[in-house]
Image 1 (cartoon, rainbow, N blue to C red):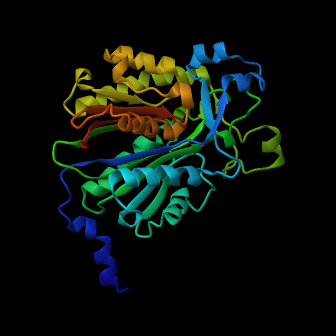
Image 2 (image 1 turned 30 degrees about the horizontal axis):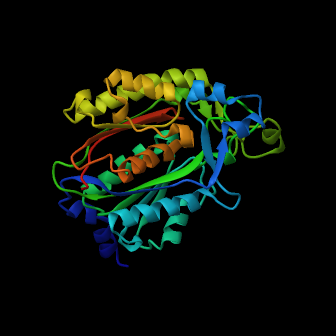
Length: 347
């Protein structure tokens, strides 16, 4: 390829007039078949159903099969999202996978998904923002489409958190589950689609929620194994206080950017981490229960998959109608947070 042609291809997005509005064209979700109930956990650690439900709202969660990795869950969700959007994999221009549990350090899980889908034309990369990953992903993908560089993007939030949970730690093992949610983004009619985003991070809170070993700072060794540093660590009390504050703040700021107020929310789709955190947001925005999407009781905290799975369930149940205003919001390790305001474009 000549320098001229390479440069021309590289600048295609800059040469385009872009599009007016970007929205979600289709959603999909997949959760593994195995169900792990609170009663099952009672046999594994010193806990009980009443304690778990009263403090978290979680009753059960899904666990990936031994032969399933994040890419396998992601592909199933992606196929359903593509079918819902009426598109084929070879029409995709971009695949973003938001995850903290990639199949491996590299290649990116997005590359594995691309290959399994047969999306040979798509650019691919992974994104790591913990539980806020899907929100970071859709806001990133939307920019590629809005500039005209790409037309269709697939954003997937997927986790196999059961692989990094310490099943002897009763404070964390009750919280997390596995699953995948996906959304296909593309041009929509003006006045619909994503209206605003609010993203943030605070690295000073890095020690509150982390998986310490396995990277370049502390590569795997006998010492890291002995110290159990390859499992999720969370300071639950501090993360809870952080979440209650930022979930509402981020959503309010995103609403303000869209020129809207809390009374304009038709559906709140929050990260599914703890029912008390969700209840605080519901109270803050003066919402009724029917305007809040909650599936925490059935799936637990699926990190980057929780928002897209909840969105897909609300869409497929028929709750969400064209013209509804959705507020998607989340928080996670990093620390990170984010919100997106979306006017639903599908009939």
